Every structure is written in structure tokens, then in C-alpha cells.
View: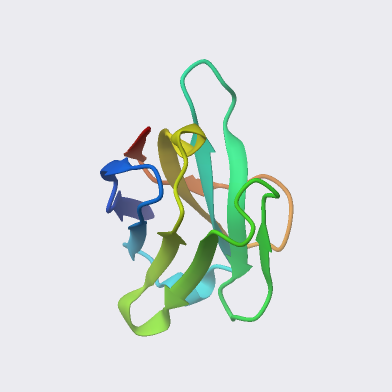
Length: 120
């Protein structure tokens, strides 16, 4: 059974930083082709934040976070990270980790989410 577990959320002031982590349990992360982060603010739809190929190299970011957020992974720890710098109040949301064994299409595996709140 695949389980993705996020951690690292919290309350931070605008301009601050947080690093989110997502550990894959029950399945070796190397079986995924891609992993990513999404977020959902209150009253809004879930939106894409960042993604990367588990093999490394290719990354993609939403325009709203380019230059501020960085996605990375640690193969040995089966973990993907989202480093968030220069946080803004509009970054406040529940952040979800996602993974999939394919290169495209719907994401099949999701974590439970971690709350990020940025105060002004």
C-alpha cells in the first residue's frame, strides 16, 4: 500500500522560509516516475506548485512560485522536499505531496496534506 506522509508545515511570517518533506512509505520511491507538490487554499481548487522526475533533472514550477520555491529529492531517504523561501500571505494553503508511476496524466497517489500559514 502506497503512503505519502508530508511534514514541515506551520506558521511563518511573510518573507520567511519553510521546508516541506514527503516520505514515501510502503513503496520504493524509485518506482515513481514523477513526484510533485500541490496546494489548496480555502475556497479554491487544488493547484499545481512544482514537480520533478524521480530520476532527477527535469523540474517544473507554477509561475507564482518560480524563483522562490525549489523541489528536490533524496533517493536514499525516499523523500521529496519543497523549499519555500520569501513566503507571501497568498502562499497560505494546505500543501499536498503527489506521486505517480507514469510521466503524465492524473496523479494517482496523494498525501494527507500539511498546513502552511503565512502571516502578514
